[in-house]
Structure formats: C-alpha cells, structure tokens
Amino acid sequence: MFKKLLIANRGEIALRIIRTCKRLGIQTAAIYSEADAESLHVNAADEAWLIGKPRVNESYLNIEKIIETAKQAGADAIHPGYGLLSENSRFAERCKEENIIFIGPSPDVIAKMGDKIEARKAMEKAKVPVVPGITHSLSSLNEAVGTSRSIGFPVMLKASFGGGGIGMQLIRNEDELKKAYEGNRKRAADFFGDGAMYIEKFVEHARHIEIQILIDHYGNAVYLWERDCSIQRRQQKVIEEAPAPLLDENMRAKLGEAAVKAALSIGYTNAGTIEFLVDQENRFYFLEMNTRLQVEHPVTEEITGLDLVREQLYIASGEPLSFSQKDVKRDGHAIEVRIYAEDPKTFFPSPGRITAFTLPEHPNIRHECAVSAGMTITPYYDPMIAKMIAKGKSRCEAIETLRAALSQYKVAGIKTNIPLLEEIVRSPAFQKGGVQTDFIQRHVLKPKGGAL
Image (tube, rainbow, N blue to C red; front, side, top):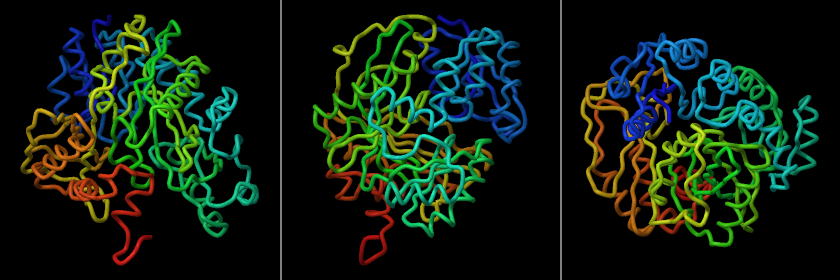
C-alpha cells in the first residue's frame, strides 16, 4: 500500500479521501489555492501545499504544478477525486511519466471514454445498446439539420468532450437547432478545448440509471448494483438513490452485466460508472462512462457496506479484488441530496460568508461536508458545499429520515437549494418512485394551473 497520497482536489471529496487514508495509515498531502487557505481539507491532511491563485487554471487545473508538488511532498500516488483533473488523460499520463500512481484507469482508457463519440463507437463494438445517433463529429449546421431529420426530433445536441451538462442542449425543432448550433459549438471549444459536436435521439421521460463497477488488474470485475440519478436540473444531478425504485431484479442484473461487459471490453481498471438511459418500455441505452469516483458514491457505500475509496486504493496498489459478484449484498435504501450555495428560485450561485451552520444529527444520516460557520464561499468553484445521505431499511423510511433532516439543516448568510430539495422530497410523485429526468420541470417548476 502507498505511504503518502497527494489529493489533487478540494472540498468535501478531499475530506472524504483523507478519512479513508487515515483508517489505512496512509499519509496525506493536500493542495489548496489562495482562496482555500482556511478550508477544512487543508487542516485535515497531514500536510498541505499552496498550489496557486484562486482561479482553477492557476491552481487545481495546473498539471505541472501539481506534479511538482507531489514530487516535493514525496507522494507515491495521486487521487484526483471527481471533477477538475479526474478525467484528464494528460494528467494521468504525466503521473505515469513521473512514476506516480494515478488512482484511476490508464490514460488511454480515460482519453477514449472522455471522447463521447469514441465511447459510442467502443460500446457499439462491444454490442452494448447505445442511444440512436451518429458516431462522427458534425461538419456543419446543414449536416446537423439533415441528421436530426433522419433521427427525428427531439434530439440532443452534444459536445463530444462535454461534461456536467455543459455543451449539451435539447433541441425540439429545426429553428431551435439553427439558433443553438454555433453557440453550443463555441461553448464546447471554450470549455473543453474542442468544439466537436454530435447528435443523438432524445429519450423522452427517461430514467437515468448508472452502474457502479470495480475492476482489478487481473480481470476480476463486479458491479455494485445501481443508482437512480434521474432528478436533474439542466442535466446536472440533484438527488441520487440506491437501489433504483421500481426496477425489477431481471432488469437490475441486465444493466449490471452490460456495465461489466462494457468496461472489460475497453480494458478498464479501478472504480468507474457506466451510465444508462432507460426508456418507458424498459429498453436501456449506454449514455456515457465516468472514469472516476462519482459524487454520489456514498449511496452505493451505504447499501453495500463497502468503502469505495479503500477499494480504489487497493486496486491501484496492485491488489486483486477480495470479493466476487456473489459476495456483493444489498442492505436497505439510501438517498443523497446535494446542497448547493445557490438561490433556490433563480439557481444563481450565492457566494458569501456563512454566519451560522447546523447539521442535523441522526444515526441514519451521513454528512459529506466541507464548510462550517464563519467560512466564506467564494465564486471561484462549483457551488456544491455538502452532501447529505439518508439511510433506511426501506425507501419509505429513508425518505422520512431525509425529510426530517432537511427541515433541521440550517445555513445562514448565504442562500441554498434546501427549499427546492424539500419540495422535491415532499412531492407525491417522488414518494411513489416514478422519477424521470424531466421530474423537476414536470413536478416542481411547472406553471401554476398546469404542466409544462
């Protein structure tokens, strides 16, 4: 096992990784920007290194500075967390060149699955169902129009290298496509350095189901059941739960087996997630692969009893998986909500100083949190400040626990999305379990007097 791990991330995920490292006796080195000097992960690590100025391209995205820091700190491995450089193949390659273990898959696998067009090709080759669409980059608006007519509106216009909902737009007709095409292409180029676009069919009223997998370096692979991530706003997840409600055991097994097949076909190792769309006829389609630890990994941990960061570290150190598929049990139900520093009405970020902060206490509530009273939320980073996970013997019990905890969650000085989360959890539609990717638009943001 590693002696020292550098964590190339910040906030709650850095704290999460530090917690497991302490249990395993691994020393930790945190990095931080000038804006994060007082952050909780800085104090929690065994040592902390200033990495640069507040903006991410001058700190948390500065590959060479992070590599240099890891060498100075004597770290033999780097955990990238999620977001930032976690799916950057160049970063993984630089780690390899410097003989630093990257906690994740190989650089070439990251590159292949980071290009959504190449990922679609790989899944078609592996005979995993993909959403109807094209497997090449669009050359012009005229081609986009012709392709959309052939597939049939509505369609999704997507950036091949996109992520986090950026460079992705629902298109319902030709006029919308003509208005969106150039702006979406430029946005993709600005954010991801490549304006390549493609089109696929929009699966209406779909469920977003993802499968957590673990694969070691010896071909041993398991799936750790599924998570339902259908409740989203602007293609960004808001609430995740495991297991997925209203999913039968046959479908559950089909999705798990397809995920393992997909990952093995590309030589994947470590923890990863295969994301699927499931339509109203229970047909499923490959959506994308996340070659990293997911934000929502705690719900899987809660129902399996596994520590996914621990498993990542053991796999990366060359250890074989210590269990097989038949050993992966399911216990109860878990629901995670993401707490954002944002106005629940406008969804604009709400930076500022937290003047009061109280977390609800309950034996079946887990907090992954990186803030406290007196801290300042800066405008430089993602506005997610915490996650809260409720566990229950049943989905009903988990919802009851979550509702009570949300009512006791107190944050003053900034606005948060807690009122939105409370509204979702109180919704009869949510409680019935029939969640779909357009849930918020249909049940929360609908105009008074009728649905959108």
